[in-house]
Image 1 (cartoon, rainbow, N blue to C red):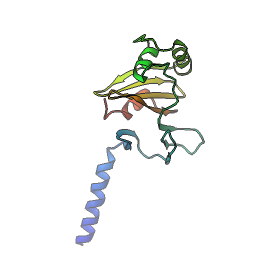
Image 2 (cartoon, one colour):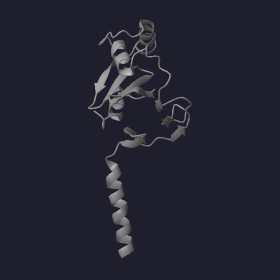
Image 3 (tube, helix red, strand yellow):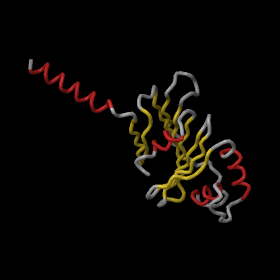
Image 4 (tube, helix red, strand yellow):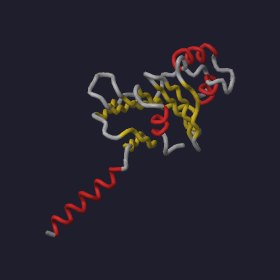
Length: 166
């Protein structure tokens, strides 16, 4: 009887801990992110970009959240933070205008854009109906840019991913 009571207590306690949780904590490098619970698959591709993907649909290419270290973005000769602020029109610091215009064409057409700022990180978002991209820069490291992409989350759900940093 005592074992049954302990088992039921543990079972009840574990369900009460997860019942209110709608997010899964992902530790990516030294960063914490919160993605929606119950992904069907989480995969890591250990390339130079350190790609981590959470997939929420059995259909190929549907309902994905991806994290990567972005080494490919052309920042027009500026630091990533200065470049993204220039893209958003907040700063014209002498970045290559062709790089800015190209980035705007790819990431800002038919997308909501802006910046969410935390104590030591900035999240430059470009959110559209079928694809959303957020670039994260850290104030203490001008050369590292993380990219987070999703093809199904709303603006609020995307912002919720970064709740521990805002």
